[in-house]
Image (tube, rainbow, N blue to C red):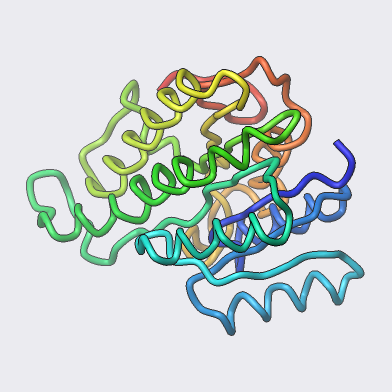
Length: 231
């Protein structure tokens, strides 16, 4: 596609910003989103300072009116969407082991990490259907793999396992849109910490590949390092 239109949630820092940078370097028209306007505008300024194109629009994936607003913006500005990258996520300070985590922490985490991507996919599906090669990339985590599940960080793990399930269902429901989850690995970001194994460029590689280069027939899968893995 020539200049694909790509929406990146949580695009103001870390992996989200790096995904936006790599996509823009590859010629994509990137729409960065973030909950806080100032943070999003500063992120966009960084990209423009590097000579890259982009746009910014506020988006809180946990609020229905905000999701409606981004849909209206994309419809009015571009009339279609080629790629949705659901990167926005939280890891609550109050998250705890499965026997100790409180239900409010679980609900709050699910709202952002699972329900936000689901509702965005539902709302943007008609715009993705207008693309010649529509794609959804959900940023997940190895901590959400049921095949290798631990008991710590229960709310986060549950939200990512559920996100992988949402991905599989979207792959089944949208035959013309490739929907996949990506595990970026343990990445050196504000949340990942300084001792993480990978830099942000490595963490963004698989999501960008899924957004632009992966076979359109690859859908409903969990992918790390451009390879399908168990979940």
